[in-house]
Image 1 (tube, rainbow, N blue to C red):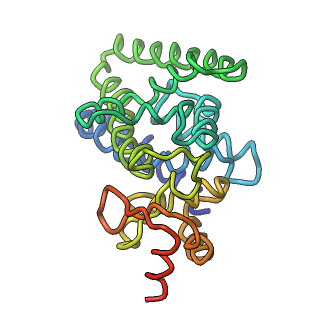
Image 2: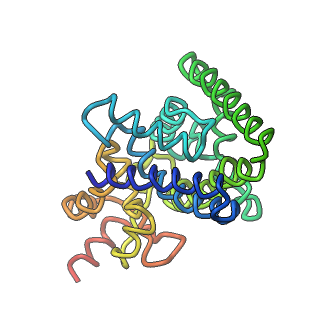
Length: 275
C-alpha cells in the first residue's frame, strides 16, 4: 500500500500538472520543473514494479508501473527497464553491468545521468539477447508514438507544453536518480558483486529519518541487492534484522553525508560493535 499510495499521488499530480500547463493556468516551465521533482519519486514506483513488488497480482503490478513510466518517460517500456535492471543485478560492477554508463570522469557525470535511457539502449545493442531485442523493438514503437504526440501538440500550438512536460521532467529525474540511485550506492565502483557481494553495494548509516525519505530507502542498497523483490520501505527493516550476520563480512558503509564509504573488515566491524 505505501507504494500504491505513492503511485496514485504521482499519477494524479502528473495529470494535474499537464492540465495546468495545457490551460496555461501555470507557466509550462514551472509545471515541467515540478513534474521533474515528481519524476524523481516516480522511480520508486517504477523500480518496485520492475521487481514485481508493488502487488502480488502481476497484471496490477505491471500496469501501475507502465502508467507511471508513460507519464515520466513516455518512450520507455517496462520490459526494457526490467531487462536492463536485471542485468545490473546479475552483473553489478562487472563489464556487462548497464549501470556502468552512469560512471565516468566527474565532469561527464551529469550528462551521463541525463542520458541513462540512451545508455540502456546502447547496452542492448552491444550485449543484448533475443529477448532484449524484442523489448527494444517495442521501445522504438513507443519512441515513435511519443514523437507523434509531441508533433501533434506542437502543430496545435502546444509546442512549449510538449517540450516542458515530455522532455524536461525525464531529464531532471534521471540526473537526480543517476546520482542517488545509479552512482552513489556503488561508490567507489571498484568491486564486482560476483567477487565480493557485500562490498559491491553500500549501506548508509546515520540521519536515517532524512535519508530514508531523500534516498527512498536506497541508503540500504546492499539489502536491495540481497532481496530485490522486497518493497523499498522494508530495506531498513532487513538491515536491522540482518545486521549481526552482515557485520561478519566486509562491508562498504557510508556514514552520514559521506560520498566515499569506509571499507570495514569483519574484525574492525566486530570491534566497533563490541564498543
